[in-house]
Image 1: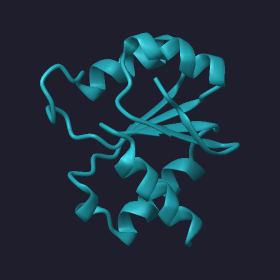
Image 2 (image 1 turned 90 degrees about the horizontal axis):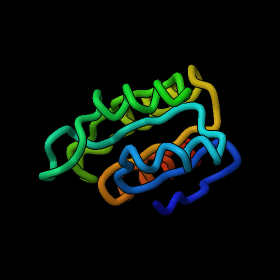
Image 3 (image 1 turned 180 degrees about the vertical axis):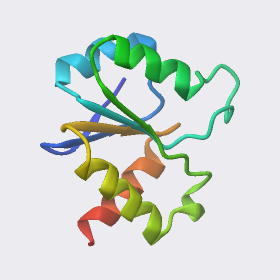
Length: 112
């Protein structure tokens, strides 16, 4: 998986799978935020199942902040994401199918 470093505390990526958890640990990720809706694609893991595996590996904080599309991203989306980050251990990884929704939400944080 390609993880894009936004800053020292935040990474974004496309869909992650169980076999990516070792890479998350190697990067020191302490929080994972999913911006995907469950069942967007065939074969996509349910977030609850993936989150359980992430937590079992030692990453305690997992959040599901589903965003249906780029056009559904609002100021409130960015505010909730900022709140999640403030309440979480960092660094964090935010992901969606391609990473685009997560990257846009991250870019809104820098405009706050």
